[in-house]
Length: 160
Image: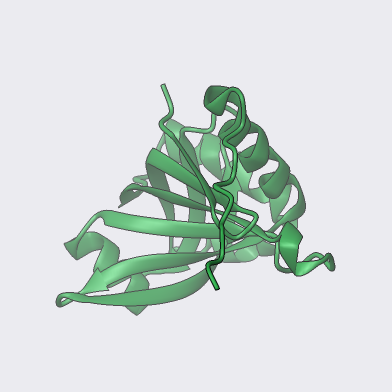
């Protein structure tokens, strides 16, 4: 017996599809899984994140004494997976977006202050944590976003 498979159709306009899905996930999800590199191995961490309105940057906070912070300082290239698994729905409606790019801790100043405000709008319960001197606010500059839906429909997008 030969099984025929149907190739999933891509959305008509990829330029708008991934940004729209990214905005939707950002509106309903608070956490993502951050992948960093450690001595040639992958290391994953759960982070509370916020996305800038222009979809170019993801912000998250981490203590400076963590493995993920040390990994980011050594190797800036990271990936952040944001998905809808926290929402009860049929498995066939699962979707995820992987954001890849360079992550850097933000230095004190205007940009950090502005991004901290944006981050705290989404995570007001983390105010004390973000304002602690032992916490780093990190900006992930998005180079590519890869959306996967319906188990096999893959669509890529690059900001700008």
